[in-house]
Amino acid sequence: MNILHLNTNDYGGAAIAAIRLHKLLLNKGYTSKILFLKKTREIETEHVYYLEDTFKSKLIFKFLYKINTLYNRRFTFCKPNIYFNGPESLFKVEKNALYKDANIIHLHWVSQAY
Image (cartoon, rainbow, N blue to C red; front, side, top):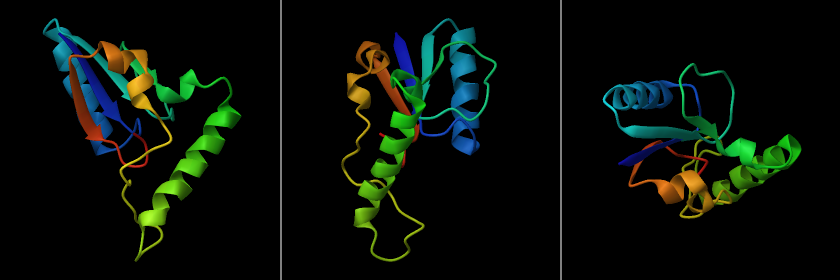
């Protein structure tokens, strides 16, 4: 059984929970992988991937990330610094090989990303 954990950031409470669950599943013999949107630190465990790394250039990723943020803020009516994703994202995780191979997709915190 292939399990894929999706999380926007590699820091914060949801990321910590995803990493702990991922390590537990690996220790129990399951095939577990984590896909984060962007990298901010080194995580000392195996099978951790970043959607950012699939882009040919960090500059292209940063540009797309900013556009995605602006695109999603179009749904905000009250506070411009607090928003949730709309039904669409410019990042197409369903085209990623990790996503295609997974039997279970575990969404942890995927605002701004997927």
